[in-house]
Image 1 (cartoon, helix red, strand yellow):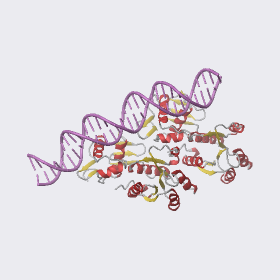
Image 2: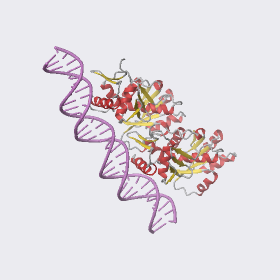
Image 3: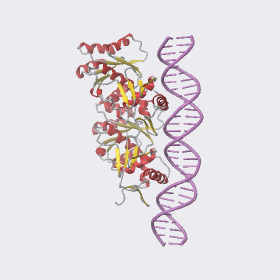
Image 4: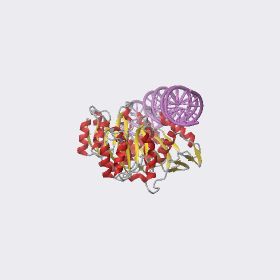
Length: 236
Length: 236
DNA sequence: GGCTACTCTCAGGTTCTTCTCAGCCAGTCC
DNA sequence: GGACTGGCTGAGAAGAACCTGAGAGTAGCC
């Protein structure tokens, strides 16, 4: 699934995270999303890996066993390269240094995050920092349009207001148009990884989405009973 | 984000600062703002770098481990070139030397500063010292006007009084018109880097600004719930 | 020293959002 | 047809995000 928008497909990521569960989750899904992923589990390993691999972007947990994330970045940048970073931080990060993370084209995501949110941020940072606006911030499918930067959604030219979760769900459907997505899959990608509710939440949000963006013909969001959902044009 | 106003885009800066955290903060964000940045961490290194690189402007901490900032400038200028300088000083610097700075076209910013303030000063000094009125001191968006030199703000021709922070916030919004800015981003750019409060201060100042400059139709300051704020004309 | 203007915090109110639950509906299988 | 299963959706509780008034503290100014 998730072949993502093409341009970053070959972007090289370095993921630095000491929790093996989260590291596995991240590297598997980012790889699956089409990124070329390498990993490190400590700050010093990260610095070396960055020298060797010259990644296009680093996903970096600020809490690491040896060096903290800020040290890692400084060491990486001493060699002169200006690699953009997406930081992973705890939600209640009272850490003084958390300020300043959005400078220099970088960004951050607070734990626990959803994979959709992380990949959206990665795409956004790559878009900003890579020369040439190669990848457009606007997704299109049939008469649906979704702007990742301004969070605007249009159906047949009509502006539609979505809540944050509705927006994430629609983006996920659009990035995976014509692909059947199970409720479990959707849950895993759109909701935070610590979400402990059940599948019904997906049904609820599909229902909300239909009411907001799929009231006109042709219908684009289809249910495959017992299998999942798919965004596609009818008569396929 | 922050592609800033175009004109200074190619200006060469030399940033001289011995604190590695602040140096990283500065070089990352100035580079992202479009400047061509090189760095030095000591006075003697700065003198050499200036000879090599011939920067258009120097950002110079007055407190350095070896030479002080004024010495550095004297040595730089012995070779005859008159490079403008923006000094970084401690807030309580009662030093007489600081006083005379604004006479020679130079300027200074007291630590801790905000990035908006520093980049505004850099732009102003470049404007004064570079031949040709390349970058205008007046920002315009819809019927909003903001003069960076006189600190005057007009909405639909009406003069509006803003406090210093309100002014900085509005300038930041105008420099990034049509771009969605998160509260974290705004905090990082408009407030001093040592500010330790929370996001609510941004909400407060947005509220003040709205009351002062956004009481008439069409509304220009928009809230994107869960995302941030954006300055834009409606019906986009 | 006293006044003013400004910055920042806090808390109450409001609106929007998330999530759960339960009942209903629609296919499917016997 | 009847029963079962999966999906849909309205109602509502809990919580999050946002706005704003009030006020404490502070810096700057006369």
